[in-house]
Every structure is written in structure tokens, then in C-alpha cells.
Picture 1 (cartoon, rainbow, N blue to C red):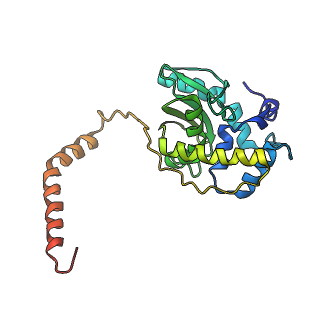
Picture 2 (picture 1 turned 135 degrees about the vertical axis):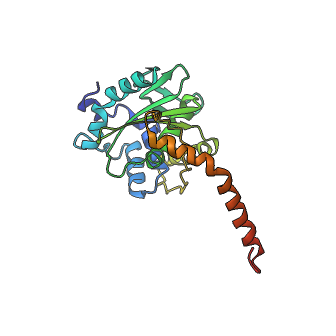
Picture 3 (picture 1 turned 135 degrees about the horizontal axis):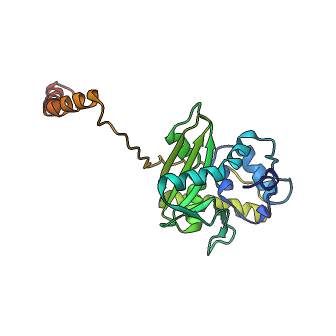
Length: 243
């Protein structure tokens, strides 16, 4: 398990753009963007996160998160905390929480608060990091494994998005060029794509009488409901001046 000291060590992070950097580069906070630029240029020290409780909760629950995924999925996680570089763009790197074996999907473990949690918001929040890591690792999918403070575990599958990855690469190239030549970067204004989620839950409803009753009603009224919607659409077309 990583210690607080490990979290705050920031070993040689100046020499590359990583997954956590991608979120800032693709985000909408120009203050954070300029600070990241200054960090990469060695003008300021990296932010001290040892006093950030949410970050530390994510750190100390990472091993549990990984073990929980392995137990529930039946798959193993390899390459834990392995740092890899893009084969062409050496300034792009990723420190992976792991890779799913078999399959090679990028594994990302997160801790999130339950108050405003939603699967869509979680995927959107971490989209840049996941797409960056998939691009660097040449992986077509990522597993986002989330433990919430409410005692809930959620597994999301995120697929590689070639268009977004192209925009991500363009933005990161511009940012890295600014690091090299000293020009202050500007926000890139790339909209995060709507995530395509694969979140599967299996619930046994065989003992529910209400489920059986409503399922039977649904099947019995399906044709009538479709006929009703068709008639409604046809009636609207007959109204003069309505398109």
C-alpha cells in the first residue's frame, strides 16, 4: 500500500504529461492550467496533497479497490503502479493503477463522495485521464472502479474515443510546446464527450410477486401502447400548420 510520503513524492513528474495532468489540460480552470505549466517548467513546487483528505482516502483505499474488483470480476490486475511512456510521444506517460488480465484494459481505482455521486458524472470527471491512459497504453477500454463514502462499489467500462483522443493529443502537444518555449498556455475549450457506459447489475426478481404481475401487464399492454403512440403521431400530422 502506498504511504502518504509516496503520494507527495512526485518523483520526476516534470518530464512528462501524465493522466492526472490531462484532466487539467482538458479542463476549464485557467489558474490550475497555468500552475501546472509552471510546475512542469520547475518554477513552482507541485501542490502538497498530503493534507487533502479525499486524495488520501483514494490512496489508502486503492489496494482494497483493486482486491474488490478482482473478487467480483474474477479477473486479475497486473502492472500495478507501473509507469509507461507512449512509444512515439515520449513526453506522454501514464502511471497505471493496473491492467486487467486477461484483456489488457486500463484499470483506474477511485474514491468518491456519495452526496452527488452519479455514474455519468464520475465517467465525465475522469474521462480525460482515462482516455490519456488508454492512448499511452494502446488499450481499447478502461475499467473505472469506484468506492464511495456511502459504502457503494461501482464498476464502469469506458471505451476508447478516437475523436476525443485526437483532440486530447492536440491539446497536450500545445501544452507541452508551451512548457518547452515558455509561452503561457491558454484553455483549449474541448467539450468532454458524453460517456458510453457499461454498468451491469444483476438482480434476482424471481421471488417478487409484484414483478411477475407488472411484467405480465407490460407484455399484455405493449401492443396497445404502441398503437396509441402511432395514432397520436398521425393525429398531430393532421393539424393544419403543424410540422
